[in-house]
Amino acid sequence: MTVANAPELVADVAGTPGSRRRPVARRRGLVRYLGLAPFAFYVLLFLAVPTLIALGTGFRDADGAFTLDNVAALADPVILGTFASSFWVSAFTAIVGAVVGALVCYAMLGLKADGAIRSFVDSASSVLAQFGGVMLAFAFIATIGIQGLVTIILRDTFGLDIYANGVWFYQVPGLLLPYIYFQVPLMVIVFMPALQGLKMQWAEASATLGGTPFTYWSRIAGPVLAPSFFGCLLLLFGNAFSSYATAAALISQGAQIVPLQIRAALISETVLGRSNMAGALALGMIVVMVVVMSAYSLLQSRTARWQQ
Image 1 (cartoon, rainbow, N blue to C red):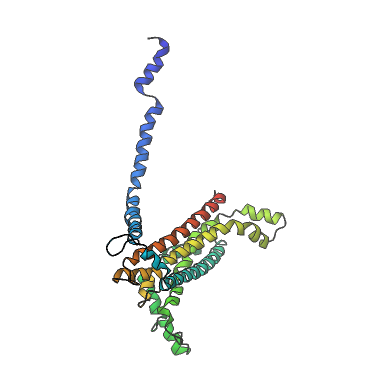
Image 2: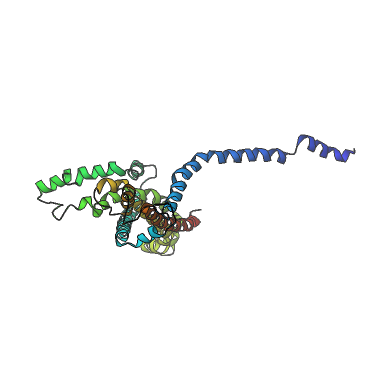
């Protein structure tokens, strides 16, 4: 053994620093993946498995044989009517929620980020965006229902009967106000980071070059915020399209939107003379949600380019 080979021998015995770091890095990576295991199990159990079951049952008849009759029933006028009702309710509440929420976000730009009002609005939006289901339905029934507090005050004090033309509140139009109630705070939560991402240097550069505020918002801020705004609009549409609990608590008769039609298909033996119709309806909803969320992801990827 020569003196020149001595460092190699020592390195082989002690191990190089890189070889010692590699097993540690592998163990840390394994720990990170194990930390995601509960979330992965949740997604698999409550998202992937129900989706696969819905897709599978939609193509099965009462005897378990493959059939396309259930999917063909999606073209039935009754089913198309429920999809149309879901579409216009979701689109209307999404547009109103997006516009009002964007205006609230714009108004909050002039407030201090750590101020009391800004903190209150952020906290209230986080709470109200999750306030839905039976609790929200009960709150609106107690407020503007047939015997609600506001209804009685308007009728007895001002002679204004909001139900003079029919009991609209317990039908599809009655879903508009409750849905807008949680759509606006959701828009505030998801759109505010995009407004905060606007750089002051852009407005200063526009003003230096002689641009007006209208020029700044129409030529610079507007195009930059457009992908984020339309992405949030799609998110609100998907949120309203898939909502069930509030509609189920308000609409007690009929299946006037797709989630309620799926409930009717599950609790009844046959719908439109077909079994397993709930799976076909769920398939239609899955297709709509996949299209909406794919478009949302595409718009968010474009938004991320200037936020980095």
